[in-house]
Length: 156
View 1 (cartoon, rainbow, N blue to C red):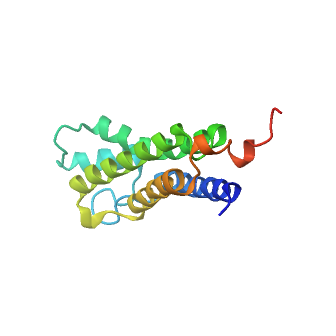
View 2 (cartoon, rainbow, N blue to C red):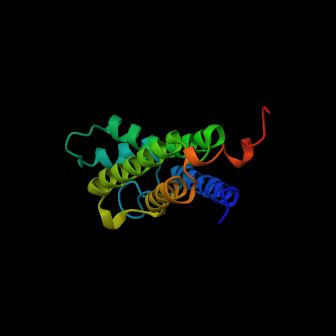
View 3 (cartoon, helix red, strand yellow):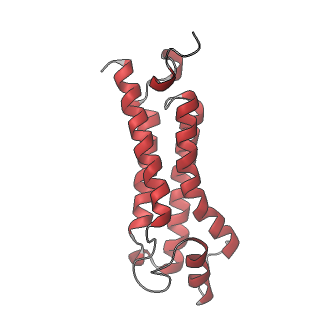
């Protein structure tokens, strides 16, 4: 596979993974039980209000952690547009996306019950894994290649 095709495939995967993480904010993270019809701050407030908690994690911290999921999806688009999917920034954001998604799923799963996790949690994890695959596996290494396909040839 040529470097241009690898860049294009990596960019497409980053767009897909970032979109999955962003859309997960609008999907249900809890499918049954307390908070099943809620998202974001309302979800965290509802599951904490019934007396459940995560050790060392307040409601505000859990809310911020949950909001970092779509934020890292959007940050992946910015890094890819500016520096390419194989850049250090894109790779770092991909790793942060996996950590944030796993931490959010772990905390909400602990509080609401792992069997009650909904589509949004798994969509966020799939998006984070897609970002890692795009930037660490598919994208050509930055030192061996030029900028992203969209940025190639500009400024010359």
